[in-house]
Image 1 (cartoon, rainbow, N blue to C red):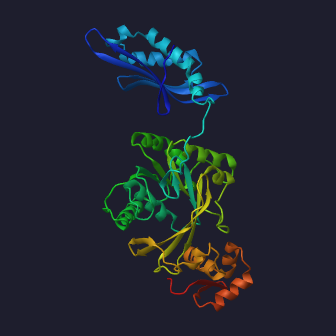
Image 2: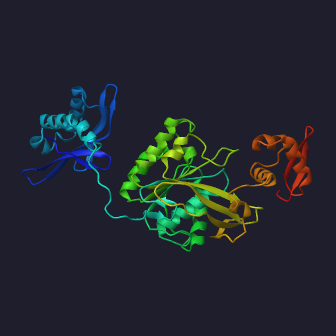
Image 3: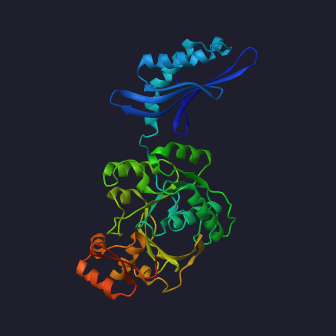
Length: 418
């Protein structure tokens, strides 16, 4: 009977030989990506000798001809050395038969129900970064684009990786930062600034995967391996919009993304965007919100490019933890990027303190700062507002100015901003 061992996401079995001349050999059969398909059980199977993969194939493990082909391919690789005497092709074929025959039952064994008892002693939830990241749980932070989410994500990642409780109480653990949004040079610059703001060397390293232009599905396997090899305790993902698993509005891709994050076997925090006209929920399927353990709505306020950026982190959903009050932070910048991160002063960001209820003037200002010069019609359509009211505001409010005319259309911008 085959004895299986589990090595990460692989099932293995091993034979050990000591030849007459004393040479040791370790033969390992390994299988991963084990799944049931319409035609039978499929897997990738490797034949490994002394740590070197001699042959591998992805095939229907129930087909004898495929097992024969893999066994013959592997045997050719060691047929000229002493191992061929102690472990001829017929022995290898028999081991492959037995190994493949029991794969599915062994795979199912880890998924079988079992009796479970409750924890005997009451205990509070175990946070990695209080109150936004729980051990072995998933968190989503959501806000419209361009509101400082990536800075908060990187500040949290460095704080947790370095064990810095400057802003949030943390329990130190190695962190992996997965960047799918920005160029490597941009992330390097931001990391240096964040390190300095948090009081560590600008050159302090952070486990990072830079994969701009790729989806999370493309990098999932190397991320899984890295998490295991480096004992990563939390993965930070920027962002869900780059998941690459299908339309985010459909339920199946949403479930696949959440499942992939949960299968990392560690805590995770990912950024999500909101619909342009409704910042109250995550863009896409409701299964994003259902699949996360903690949802954090990020509110923001910045009165000008020179002014601090106010960030409010509001727990929108929290499984198994009490409701915590919103934490408001102030991020300060100069021409080279982030220069400061501190708790906000009372009354410094009234719109954030008010829960994100903003005036029409603030909405228009934020839109123009993000998009650039626009007509009243364009702004009204984007914000879902009445054009007549909006047109009157643009004329009356002195923070706005007509900066261009094209084909009888007036284009407005924020006075003093470019």
